[in-house]
Image (cartoon, rainbow, N blue to C red):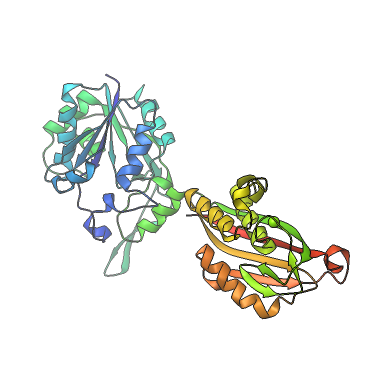
Length: 376
Ligand code: MG
């Protein structure tokens, strides 16, 4: 008893182009099959899943746990019947039949179909046609068609298991979908709301559109960082990984690269992952004299682990001296190399504070930075 879904994935999907059948191509990180499995597995009212694949693709399903994988027939009708027959051992009360070429199926659509099946023999999602409709020939309009009462059909289409099994067994010829099979058997089909995200991937251009829906809204993060180090007696400072001869050095536990610290904190900030002091406590002797790229590389690795990539870094160094301009190109290149960015995405600039404050009194150097991260 309960509810089952048959995921029909046996097609060759040749119109969609590409090397692999469309249902197995990467779509925002996983295949259409994986997206559909994720949605139906996650639905609390789905008790059994049958995945119907082409025998050529059976290999790809190794490791798919908790579902029944079977091979399809010569066409969609035969594949669905194979799926229905596979449920015969443990027949459900209701069955949904879904084309995996619609990876944008949502829990709400499934809810709508299952909800309607409580009072109807069959239910399927659809969207009312809103465009004007024409009949055309040789790129010319030869007639117009009234769109009143016309719908664009989607899946999953839901049925009482025993009635759709019988309908499929009795059906001869080919049908565009299972609603057509149901109607031929005299079964009433209720229309429930579909969703534009649940469109069918058919042509090459549909992949980019599907990725937009599946990825969801873009996750863009901006982080800021600020750091200050005081001068102490010495003969060079390290800024953005570049050693610059100077009549003082910067005081700090590590190499005191104030600019690299600000950029590193901007990355941690964008990730909501604290700051350098939390990851590399000054009290820990192992970071004594450490080169600051250790910290920046750590933040970059964390960023990749969290699924983000860096698109831009802007850093401002605030000091009266040393002069930053002659070194800014080397700094950009050094920073870009550490972060795996092209140098044109790294901005290093400098300003004085007009002789005001601690930087104006040449007591130290301050740096501020902004980093922009995008979910990959
Ligand atoms: Mg610092």
